[in-house]
Figure 1 (cartoon, one colour):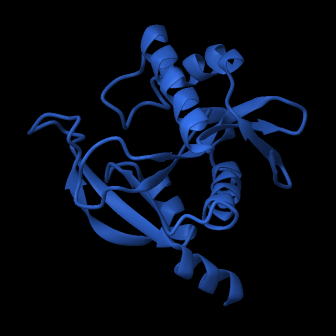
Figure 2 (cartoon, rainbow, N blue to C red):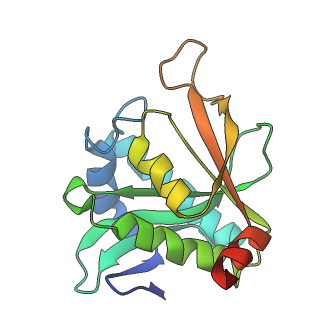
Length: 181
């Protein structure tokens, strides 16, 4: 469990399927993805997250208020596709719209980075999103991640409007320097 002032992050479990599916089916939340996920697609994604956690000892976490209300999800995972920056561990977040613009994703991401670059000992964490997802890339900048160009996401076909992704990176050394600075 990772605890912050307004939220806690706990490892995802199979019982989180309904909340995960509701988040993944939300058209507003998923507007920077090719499409919202069906329940079956969301359940498959949750199974992959559980398998990742079991194999690597880290992964997707549920972001919840201290009273147990679901806020969203945030976590770390090995990137599953080949790109110029892989192998790499990605930080990703997804929050329900009613919890946007309150600093909760930033709080969750800071807890996640501190865990990944601290106790887990990762050398670097990356993040990526579509250029239109200003909220996410601005958060990446606030987290001290540095822009490193972009790439064509291999899961999307050439010409797809969401194929190009902006890439951000944060090394352990950069993270430590920020904390000392």
